[in-house]
Image 1 (cartoon, rainbow, N blue to C red):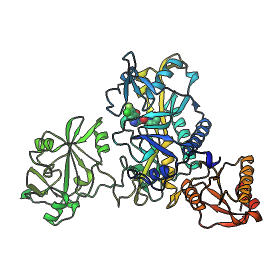
Image 2: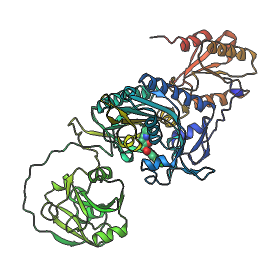
Image 3: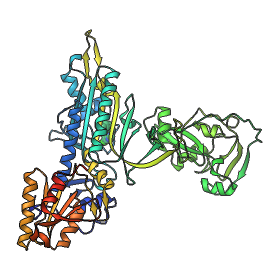
Length: 568
Ligand code: 9G3
């Protein structure tokens, strides 16, 4: 590729609204351009990377025995009504009408489509197990698209769906996909963790894992034990717990304390000059519009996913001030577990283990001291309803939990029969009996991988592409194209690499050397060969983008460094 003919519009500065490092760098290196909020064009260099990521995913999916197909983006609304999801999803599901006024959705995922396909085409146990996958554009009208390709409204996903005859077959396919994902994320150069996750809205009847690329910009928080044996999304993460020996101490009766305007944990802590861990924090929620109160220790955070799963609900939201007033009779900040009627009370096991605590009095400007669990209140449910926190030990007892931010680049689910039941994906078993296929689904964010890789591979001058997915392997830069000797030696090297099947980018632009070097730093190809003043002696300057320093050597040596890297 000759840069003088390529569209690589590098920028000295990123647009002001680009915040994430990867977003800034992908714009500045001329890899992507925004068409609309959350909607991007992949320019030639960006598209070369996207294609290489797809190629790796295809190789590993095929190796895992999946077969590739391609489904439409336009999905008839009837399918989503059959699965019962058309009403579940709100504005995030992009809907349209065709010229005959028929309703469609632009596919955010393809469970409905693939299951109805298999329902129509598979009827015998002999055809199973079967895993089908596609690499295709997904549409999700995110309320707040941001960080470039990290959270777009139109993005490229590999989505695979497996159909089997037993949970054992599903386990085997799940494991094959899990291992394929491990190979994929390793090959694209990501530092990632597979973590236990929550199935969320998709539901499903079994385990699910997310593959998280570690990055500060990541929206998710994951929790990993020191030795790595335990890893979970914070939504699901548990912590070591042992019931304390019931040291039953006699606690004086509750007494009301006037606490005007003291309604935050911090204010309470100061007011009573005690640790937050001596407080009982009570938050009000609506779970599928039913009122729920959750009591956790003052220094903890409520884990809404655990609350939702404990109650088997679909939707959870924090009660607003009006609802809190209605349910507790007090303004926000004065709720407490004692004397709370008409709500389902969930009590975290740490609170249950407190001898007593200070809690809201369910009366504005009043709190209660000496609130004793079991005496002054009893939860409908007592369990783990809090987020894991710094200092917690791993549930398997192996060391302290560590917290990282992560970008979800993959997600594998055991779905069970949730979709195959509704959409009729059934088959006749050996005995001629109709059975429902047992499904799994497996997603990879292809376009998101580009951003995740850049987030993990850049320095102050630009991107540091891993060789496996770099737009090209070597950047050949004649310092001045006006110097015939430099240009000829650069062209000779370019031809030699190209003939050897090694992708080279030749910067043959009539630009000052400094401009070329800045662009080369930005674009971030793994190797760089500069043909400068010593061209006449057949000598060039060799540099690895990821390492400091550069070395003078002959053009032949530079070629061999890349074409035949020493095994040493
Ligand atoms: C929707 C909209 C957004 C969605 C979904 C449906 C996420 C939805 C979950 C999945 C599950 C798996 C197959 C590949 C791996 C992930 N966002 N999910 O179902 F209508 Cl608007 O997509 N699908």
